[in-house]
Length: 113
Image 1 (cartoon, rainbow, N blue to C red):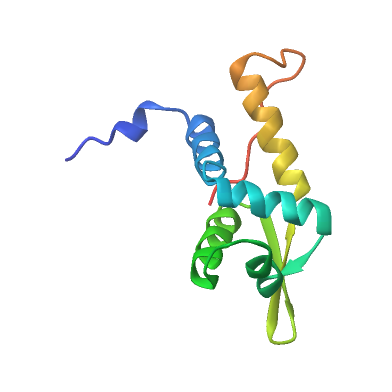
Image 2 (image 1 turned 45 degrees about the horizontal axis):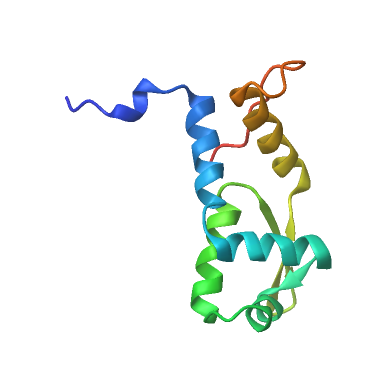
């Protein structure tokens, strides 16, 4: 049986790595900032706000959605996106606890997909 190196790490560390990976692209950070300012936006609005193709924006949105950082709802034929602020807070808190910068609380479990 093949040995996977990912089994060497705790599930909490694996989940944090997924969140960190989702935040590791400047376009995704820009999307989060736009949604933070607007509250909610449909894909067309996000495409108009960034110098990227619609397909590229959709891929970045999917990446953020897969780790639970975005929520989506159907707005007729469009899909609107908003931040999942609770997931973002949980990620930030867990990251701080893991790094030892928040010793008052134990790490909280982040959403795993």
